[in-house]
Length: 354
Image 1 (tube, rainbow, N blue to C red):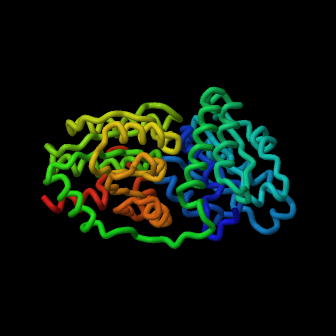
Image 2: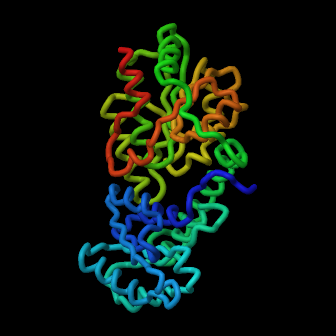
Image 3: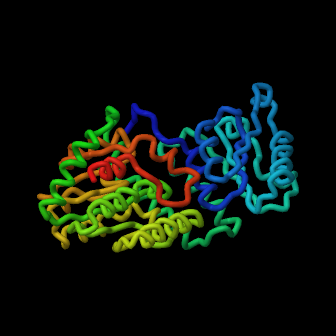
């Protein structure tokens, strides 16, 4: 399918994967404006992002020395244990040899290089190539690389079947008004209906999405609600750390929950969670994070409150029969750099009803 709406970039995906691997400095070998927004955001998460700032003359003659210079600067200034060199469309077009530049820099740090561009149909190519380089460098095992490949395929499948990649173009939407959805949710809680709240969130977004569970439990601690969360400690270093932080935050608040899946398994988690919901047989479900991972056959006759951070996910969820779809606007940028459960818009609206 040819998409007529902006899609994530393989270069950006490589940067985020480098961060998840515990890279201290990522060097983008390309123009200074390449992936500018995400590079700046990732610095909020503790990874330094430098650029070789290629100019038009280097588009023709190459920029080996520029990359060597920036790599030496990165090590001298920041002393990172791990460095990732991420290619761009320009570096691939001119045929820059990233490995040769890394060898010339003669660094103490462990370094991987990723030849990537933004022209791939699937942005996960940036993730896969970064993980392959990490496996070659001994940063992750072959078993983890195999696991990640499977998870990426599942996540892509969910997007194609029920997500923002299911049609050529989807009109973005802010979703239902939060106070209207919260009012209906509280009505169900007060009348004693049986509910289930499921956190099935993607990686660091769970820091904010988890707050919705916290808010419900704060305002209605005796509500007949079963809590479920994808917080099993598996995955790349940052993913495990995030999972442990959020799980600790929930337990400190005396919230009891069942773990189903890990933070990087959100796309592969749908059937496991769906079967759990079906067996529990609730009157309503609060699906938080990646609600479209759960096939609609598990949600028959259940009033769904689905919370997403994707404005283009509203229509697909409505088409699948979700009664209430709430969007946490700009949640992903807000989740960078935090290490504990953080207030959500919908959570604060629920609190306001107390």
